[in-house]
Length: 483
Image (cartoon, rainbow, N blue to C red):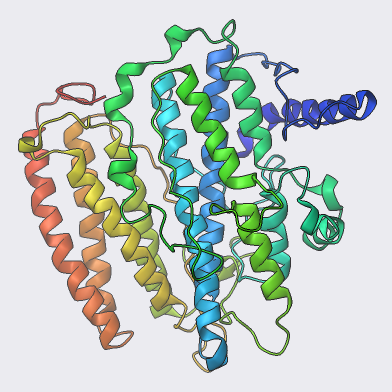
């Protein structure tokens, strides 16, 4: 989240505090996290209610994006030869739990983009970056290997205000482990969603005409994004347990927008004393994982990866980060950064193309989405290679790690031909890095690079064709089935 937006958010925190104070004085029913429906969110100077709702959706998108990257880094830190053989299946299951949450956070991020389309706002795939301490973020943005303290943070920011009875006795000590100041030292993710819900439900402030049902064909759907993620063992706490669907929710009205916000909040925070709940929330899964990891003392479940890795710039350029000094490892990290940029570009481009656009055209959303899914798998493969490579001197134990550094911009060009050309530019940049990395990390890595290069060559051919078909200088998105 960029610091230029945070000063607008302080009033939300103040209202949340006022709501809790009123509750304490009136002995009213416990409100939902954040501003309850009985308190109308203040609209800051310089905003209309509609514009402020779009602003809050931008903030929600950045929080979801930031959390999923941090969860992803923690998941990739797990494993390694230092894990005793009898515990390796257990650690692999822990990784699966976190990766399941990551996929659900991706669903939340995509659903927020759908709501932005519905309200006619620009998309936002940005997130917080180094330096990381900003006033509204649930906790400072850092990429760290998994630990009980880090899991305690995940538990707290995903938690409801009232913990279920089976864990209520641990609430205070877990909050103090996670944050020095305890409960008053962090912000729950639900504050933003509760404020958004209150605002979008207000028909006087945001009339029905501002919910654009005609954007539905441009929104992402579960049919496109939910591949293999429907009620499986993905990310389950217990081996035989089922998990919730990845939520990719479209919206075409006020009521469907509110349903989407409620579903996101429930998947993150919902908690009950029913231990047989078939759809455990993020809070519940992180709590179970915290209790399991807390019991480990004689061995480490994590590789010795560096925290806050950085592959761009010079050593010492950003305080609090660890520069990947090994040149080969740094090149692998830069390839991962590039594929991360490509993924975000494909996701952004997919929202420009209507799902109703004919499959015979060749510039279909499906073609872009296929590339997006490919990049998700590429990021995992690259991360798995990186965590085995030295961070500096190969004789030292420290391993490199994925840095997920953001590009200079994530804005797509206005003209369609230039959007396709940007994809080609990034693929050509990857071609150079792939050639440089061959032979640097073993046969398995070389096989991956060979496959990656072949798929990239096919994509360049397809995107160059798309670029030629969009060559008219006036063909911007919004023309010919795009919006």
